[in-house]
Length: 406
Image 1 (tube, rainbow, N blue to C red):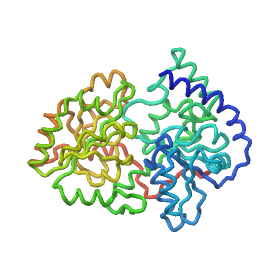
Image 2: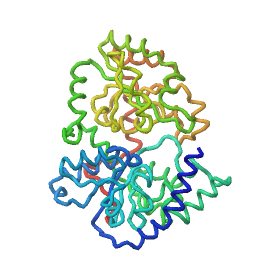
Image 3: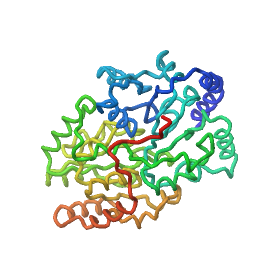
Image 4: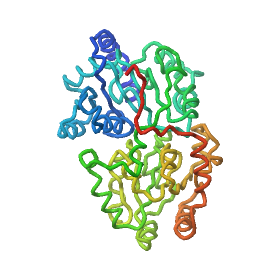
């Protein structure tokens, strides 16, 4: 907490003069910088927006969309494909950010750098059709000193407020309405409803049957095709991160009483593969836990969507990924061992039990029973899932539309 506070203080103090410079720095209106996952990975909605841009014959000749990353490996990978990408902390990366007329992000300003893109139009693609409340009214309130201080930052030092943006994209009208409160301090012109646009989440393009994974962008493709051929069924578990409880994926495994040895035997007898995909903040925590098992696999890539393309059954809890997975019409199970604790801490936009997308399980024994039932009987939530999908009326246009100003 102390380290986080020091970093925040440095961002405010040092970022201020840089922000003022970026505000007056001459802009190139057709230059857009793009980043994601706190600048760490090539993933999420910006990844697929970037791929669509550079694989579309009508857009690929325009190289004014530049990926910015704090990860040199990401920059090297994209540069090896002869695509524009810059390391944020290089002179060229800083110059690109200062010069850009637009910036595209998915999580928060630190996907790139709030101080360096002060004069740019910021487009927030966002990373969730959220179940739990986020931003103002969810992650924080202004009824205490900390909240009032954050409100001050949002209003007067927008480069240091993590949710600052000029435009926000929402995948449906319901998500747009849920965003009014959450992003109420995000827009610098305060026109909240006018600056939230309904558009498809680019990452869901990956889940379409006719979306081919280009090997240059997806080095995991060969591995995924191999395990898909080897195993009769792939079950993927994507628990949400629990940093607000001070817990990692290892804690989740322990707290939920997941017996990896028993799970491995369960899958081995059926020739199934159980994939554990941790949140990108927890990737380093989980690498070693399943190396002794042949039917449990740790997915080490930050982007889960290629994996979901091959997934037969999704297991999650409160992650927004289930809203995306209903698009492929495959079974979803909820492993919610800490439902009451989580619900009391993180308020939900919807009544969890009323979503009717899949069974809510409190133990791993219940999960295993549901998996057997799905395999031997049928997917009893199929009709309810389709009804839920229709009720949300997600935008599904194959072309991701962002505001005309960009």
